[in-house]
Length: 240
Image (cartoon, rainbow, N blue to C red; front, side, top):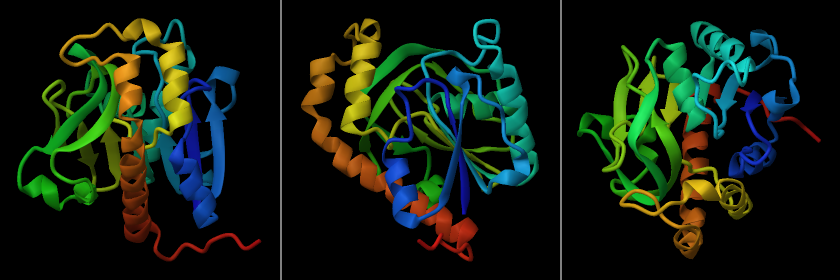
C-alpha cells in the first residue's frame, strides 16, 4: 500500500501511525507544507493521511498552501482515495466538502471521554473505539458534519468529534496517534493555550495521564488494521 501524509508543522507528525506503517512494510511519502514542498500526483498513493497543526483552515493569507491543500483533498476524495484526517486534518476534509469550520464554544485540550452519537454509529469503522473512551484532545476549532457524512462520535466539550463520508473518508477531531514525545513537544510549543477551564487541562494534568497513550495508540493500530482489511486486503507488503 502507498500512503501519503500531509504535515503542517514539524511537531505534529504521524506519531504511532509511522510505527504501524513501518511494521506493515507499506510505502510512506510525505508533503511537509512548512517546508514549501510540492503536492504529489493523486495517482501516487492509495491512502492519504492529513495531520494536525495549530493554524485554522481559514488562514490562507498566512499559510497560502492551505487553499491548494483543500482543493487537493477534495480531488483525492473525488478519486475515491481512502482518506484519514486528524484534528486540523479533519477540519480540512470538512472544508473541502463545503462544511464551514468555526471556533468551538471552548478550546478542548486534555484527556476527555468521547461517546457514540447513536446505536447505528457503533456499527461503523470506528467501532474499534470503546464507548466513553478517554482520548487526548487539542483544538480550538470545530468542524460541522459535511452533507452526506455520518456523525459518529461526540464529547461534552465538542459535539462533532468524528464523521465518516462515503464510507472511506474519516475525520477525527481527537488524537489517537500522539506519542509521549509529541505530547511533550506540544506542551512546550503551545503552552499559551493551556489556560485551565472545564475543557482545558494544564500541562501537568495532561502528563499525569500520559500512560493512557498506550491504550489510544493501540486503538489507532486497531483502526488502521481495520481500514487496511476493508480497503487494501489484497495489497502486498514491501519485501526487504
